[in-house]
Length: 325
Image 1 (tube, rainbow, N blue to C red):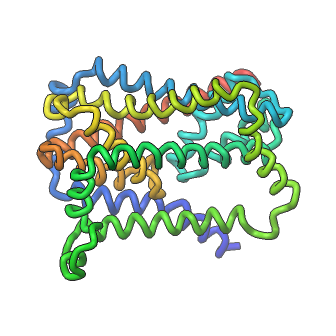
Image 2 (tube, one colour; image 1 turned 120 degrees about the horizontal axis):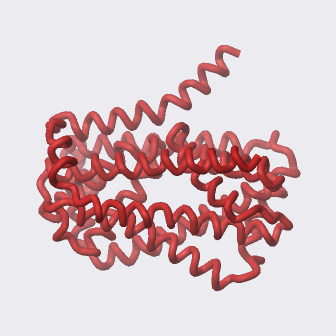
C-alpha cells in the first residue's frame, strides 16, 4: 500500500519538479524586478484582452465539436455541459498533466450519463486529428521559415553537429531532459490504458468513439470547427506580440514559428507546459532579434496570464455544472 501511494505521489510530483528544473535553468540569471514595471507601464491590456477572448473561444468551439462526435454514438449531452467539461479538463491538466482527458469524460458521465469509454474514444480521435493538424501547420511553417528552424536547432544543440559541440551545449541538456519527461509520460499512458487487464467493454467503447468522427451528422461543420479551433489557438498566442513594444514588430510568420515550437514544447509533461514552453519561445524569439531579457519577460507574463485564464475558466465551468446539478 505504501509502495503504491509512493508511486502515485512520485507520478504527481514529477511534472512539477520537471517544470521547476527547466524554469530555473531558463530564468536563473533573470532580474524579476522587471516584471512589475512591465506589467504596470508597458503591457497593452486591450490587446491582451482580445488574445484571451480567442483563448476562450477555442475551448468553446472544442466543446461544440465534441458534442458532434458523441451524437453518432447515441450520446446527446448538452452543449453547455460539453463546453464546461472542456474548461474543467484544461484546469485539471494543471494539476496532473494529461489528466484532463479523463476528467472531461467523467464530467459528462456525471452530468448527462454519457458512456465513459465511448467519450474517451472520441477524445482519442480528437488527439489524432490535433496531431494531424499540428503536423500540417508545422510542415508549412518549416517550409516558409526553414532558416529560422535551422538556427533554432543549432542554438539548442539539437542539430547534428560534432559530438563534442553537442555535449558542450547547455540547451541540449534541457532538450534531453524534456524528451525524457515525454517518454516517461508515454510509458505511464501505455501502462494505464494498454494493459490486458482492461475489460473488453472499455476497449470496444473507445473503438466506437474513435470511429464516431466518420459518422458525424454535419461533416463540413466539423471541419469548420476544427479549422477555427486552430485559428483561435494561433491568434490567442500571436496577438500577445502586440502587448509589448519589443515584440509588436514581429509578423505572422514569426508567430507561426513560435506557435509551432510552443505547441511541441507543451507535449512535455509539466503543468501547462511550464518550463519547456518558456525555453522554446524565448529561444525562437531571440532568433528574430528580441533581446534575451525581453524574450524572457514576454514568455513569463504571457504564460502566467494564459494559465490564469485556464484556472478561471476551470472554476467557472465547475461552478456552472455544480449549480445545474
